[in-house]
Image 1: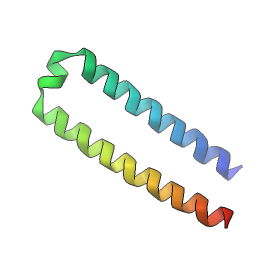
Image 2: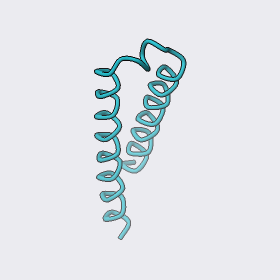
Image 3: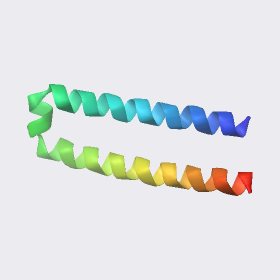
Image 4: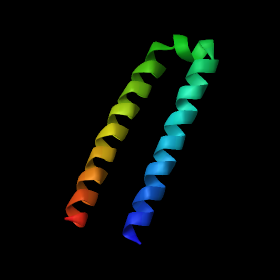
Length: 63
């Protein structure tokens, strides 16, 4: 049950990042906004760290 919740959460994160990337690619105003670009980069880094943490938790649980 726990693994299922983690998998669902990862899927939601991936879909959210995909929507952000798509919006950025299709909107010149978004692409030109330096502050938004900085926030986007920060969000991507936070999500990367969260996924790495989740991966570590899963690895420990499977061991």
